[in-house]
Image (cartoon, rainbow, N blue to C red; front, side):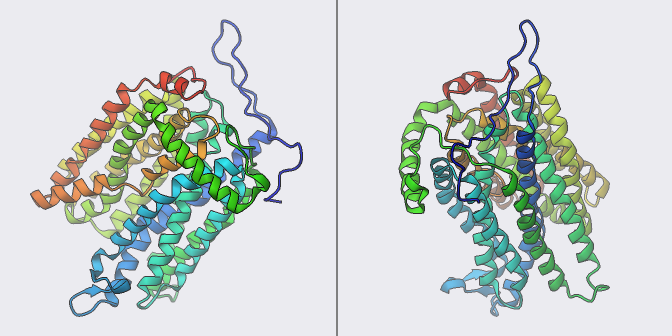
Length: 474
């Protein structure tokens, strides 16, 4: 049963064997129970990544925009809830609303998860509701732009909340010296899952006429299939993952929902007051906010840059997105191996140098040069997965024990799909210069400043101040 811990049962602890005297760190033995649980953890990245790839990145934005345009008046405006907005701006406002709600909800979600100790139930609940809303996008047709917005807002909010709970398992599944490798494997498997469903969806979409479908029906099937995928593979994760008893927090009496919610608010308030004690953890969050904003913005505007500035076809742009997903699988694994030898911090810093080079190359790309665009997509894919996976594992070292989900709530606010500083700078630069080349080049700011902040951070001291044991290599 999901809602009950057997009396006296505790999951097997993470096994990190001490190094032999005078030798390097020994490979820790991993028992079968922990292997199964890690497989369940990897499986959720495989399950959830399709929402970010197929729904948010590829299919929903243009489709919901077309639905809004079909419902627009003679001036090209729609009136959701009595508010007049241009139909072309509709999805942007919907995405922004979901982000604002995530900022409010995700830290509280983490506090409840840490306090209740019922992460399996929370993961199952959020993933179920989010996937059902995604499946229901099949019914977004004709002029139902309000239905599409409501379903996406709820699904994206559940996606973020489930991700917070999912991330918080990492310290329970890997010791300090294993964490980079485990995080990298999870991220790599997620990219592989996202790429596989996206490839299947693109096959359906490009052949919809021969299958007797309209273009809208094909898109709706692709959206709904992401929900089915998300729900189906989450079953594997929920089956294999295990709850832990709360650490350093007062358990919820009886496990009642009202007690968990009230206790979550109290714990969140205490953590916000206590954050000043962990100034180095806050420093890392600020650095991550900056360079991850750069990462998210490059991914978010690359299709727009390719279409408007480089005049590339839609087929080229979508296939480049698929290429990034495939290469990111290998990149996450490769950078995880590099981090095992030189440390996560150094690996991330070198990846940020590559990101800076990507923007310089993008500035000089020739219009219509599809091969050059594919080459740039390959470079992006290689550093994308590793940058995100190693940032996740490095941050997990900076969290006070027992507050993993809560701190990952703050972390997730600036993670996948929740950045806004980068798009703002990109849009402002374009408005001032009327050049997409200057706009894309302006994003170097995030990688340079974020990289400098990370370089100045004493990671070992930050880990110790958080009450954790530093890995050998940082």
